[in-house]
Image 1 (tube, rainbow, N blue to C red):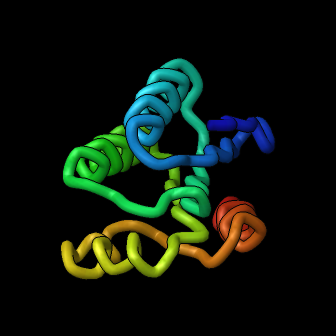
Image 2 (cartoon, rainbow, N blue to C red):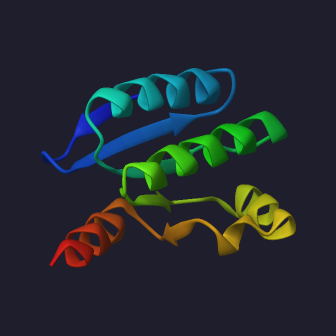
Length: 111
């Protein structure tokens, strides 16, 4: 996974399938404890998501809300999107089609 500090206020994380997904979110959550930023999670390389992944995403969302930061998920494929729809998580997370749109939405929210 690549975690990039896109700016002082925004971090972009490229996620992969398990077992990397779990490790990558753990690394990201640890980094955000010391320096909270808004986060864009790029799901372009994620082909499936399981209950453990969902639990981690919910913990990350809670951590982000506690530090008054935004979380945007982007480039979610059809199979993974189906899981978000069935579980109702499409209503709790913010989604965009690509990284550029996610970054733009975060920047506009700051203005």
